[in-house]
Image 1 (tube, rainbow, N blue to C red):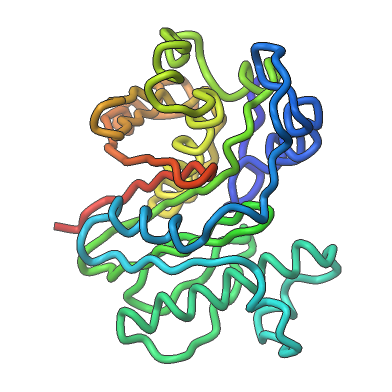
Image 2 (cartoon, one colour):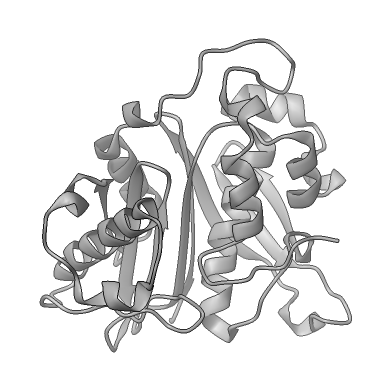
Length: 267
């Protein structure tokens, strides 16, 4: 049974497993051949943000960077709602809120508090939609006006391959058909890319109806040449057929960081 999403931030069960997937992270890839270990701190936030900005439509403001701004000895008002969390979680949260304020300034929104909903979704100022995503060392935020966009969803992840176990949780057989050829053309792990795309889609979809999804509730088709992805809700007893139309998103890879964005126009 596919894990359902337990909070707005995505599929936490799978993310925890990904963080502990040391067989893949410490120098062995899916074909069994050794490779150099991943070094997260080498990923370039400047290149990532520039690439992300090329990905999104006009009207969406993207900001991002590493977690260094979060090390300033100034407590944010939003941190009160975090409760007792590990330092790494507090640091990434602080970085996300700092980048979000910067992005909002790009829309002319003055300094503002961005609280957390009970489902852990960020509470954006009136008239704003947006999304926040982190890796272990980078953060990206995308925001836009609700007059132009009904919803925005983004995700970024390190391009370390998923294990066979996680691949089965994330992707269906049809989605990984022709895997070797796709991976040669894109230069990344296909199951991990599908995870990133589904995560971005879920964040966009959740803002529309607050409905939780399992990985296999979503089917993805890639256009490798255009770097676009179509995502659709798979009809089931739990999910109405009315939701089953294609949503188009985009994806990319920058210095070892995979990223994806889905947005729904209000026009």
